Length: 140
Image (tube, rainbow, N blue to C red; front, side, top):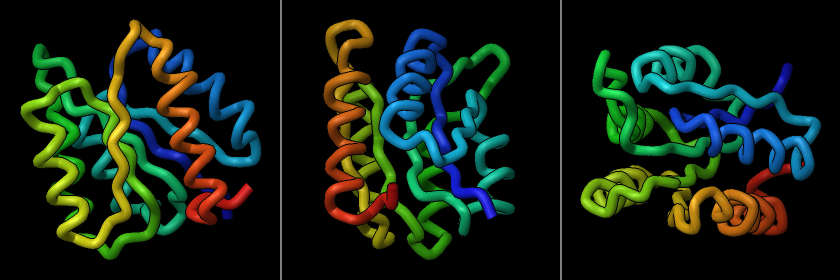
C-alpha cells in the first residue's frame, strides 16, 4: 500500500520547489497535489490512512472558487489524527485559526512562514520535514 504526502497549493513556483525537496528528502513516498479544497477532502476521505504528511496553504483561486485550506482543516478536525500537518500560508489572518483547530482536534501541527519569494520552501519547509523525520513522525 503506497504512502502519500498530500499538499494543498496553487502556486506553480512553490510546487516546483516542493516537488524537488520531496524527491530529495523522501523519494520513497508518493506525492499528491491539489489546488482545490473540495477535491483534496474527497481524496482524503478515501486515503487518509495512507497519508504520512499533509501540507496546507490557505488562499486558493477564487474564480472559480477552489475553497480554502481552512475547509481541509475543518474536515481533518472530524477525523482521528494520523499524521503531522504543516500550515504553510502567508495569510496571517487565517493561519492561527487553522493551527488552533488542528491542535484542538489532536493533530500534530506545525507552522511554516513563507518569505523571500520561494526560498522558504528549500529552507523552512524542507527543514520542518527534516525535523518531522528526525522526530519519527515521518518514516524514511
